[in-house]
Image (cartoon, rainbow, N blue to C red):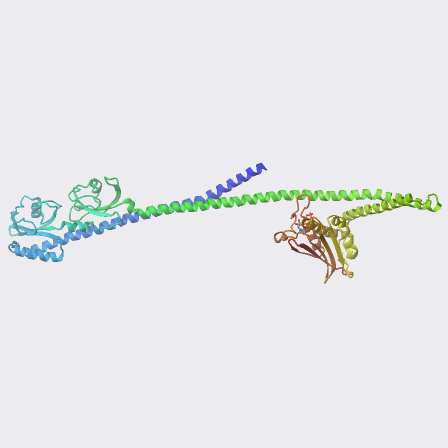
Length: 564
Ligand SMILES: Nc1ncnc2c1ncn2[C@@H]1O[C@H](COP(=O)(O)OP(=O)(O)OP(=O)(O)O)[C@@H](O)[C@H]1O
Ligand SMILES: [Mg+2]
């Protein structure tokens, strides 16, 4: 028994391992491949989104600068130097330009020697000489110049756009200061997620616009070394800045000015979809894993329970079979004993008859006188005779039981046959306080059947009824009723009792071989299944109705004998 418990544990372990490992392999593959391809897609999307933003922003800033340059070139080509150095005229032109775009702070005209000839704006810059300023030299040489942010005479960070025009041998210059507040806002206007920001650095890594997350105008950006390496149109990469925060960068050089536009977003923010995906994947793995493991436990438990049940049923069946075999051996032995006892019984009967005869002769001849003792002897002889007859009746019944199994089917008159079988259980019933009542129709027709087999059927029904009554009424009060009558083309035998009855659940099983509610050694559970087989082979039917706690009624319908 102990060994078998260990076996079940091993079986359960193997089932569990297989049920967990086998579905886990495709599941892990699906989740792994799904996770890999989704992360790749999310990464690619985030990066290309940044690329698109930096490109759009670059175009917009470039457009702004080109527009301002075009404004100044238009003025330069539309008015003469003489007209432009008149402060009134300069003011009118400035105000007209501001109507189109409010992006200029001031405007000034410079002569060939770099002297500020006319100025319109909030500072006092007229008359100052700019011939040594780098921007002045550049604009004279190139014809157009956009400066980096610088302090200049006014000591305030700003940047200028200057254009030059050559009239005969003299070159004059028109210069305007761009509203750095407006430009700053224009560059910073990018909004991506919570942490997205954009700013401009010059070729030396100096801030040309300030940075939301820290970085003031004209300061040097420490991370510039990483940024400006590539000459590509747009570069994207992930890098940690000096504060240790990781950013997804997209950078792009402006076309007409040596400025680097930087757009960046914290990696956590840029790839937050990725984090969501990780959470979802972990959740899927936990939920599906739990489902796989729980169902594996549940199914393996059920399989092992079924195995245990089958094994215990097998053990039970084996016990029943052994009991059935033993019963059949006892049956054979009983027939043998009955046969052996029958002979001495006959001798005893003969001796008793002879003794009685001799005593009667002696009484007639007067050899024995009438007395009370003689009466006692005669009574005793009579009792011996009675008991010998009873014994021989019992042995005859046993012999009949054994012999009739081999008898051939014949016409049976139930009027004679039934009382004979009932007599066999009469004693058992009386001992248990059970009353037997039998009603056999006088006109009952003959049936065709095998007497031995029919006896087996009836005895099993009677014994079942007696057992059910003893269970229900152990102190007596039982009633076993046997009724036989014609019923259409059949003859019916009804065996009813007021015993414990049969539950609905058991009702479906009572005709199954080896089904019994009796303890091992008391019943094999073969009785009704054999009865059913016998009645069917006789061309008959067997029905049952029962009410739990009230009683049971078995009805056998047997075809009548044709010749009758
Ligand atoms: N008259 C009845 N009243 C209540 N239960 C019955 C009755 N007849 C049969 N049963 C139920 O049907 C079961 C099967 O009966 P069956 O005659 O096939 O086997 P058994 O009587 O248990 O064993 P065996 O016939 O080998 O002694 C019984 O164990 C009992 O539970
Ligand atoms: Mg039985």
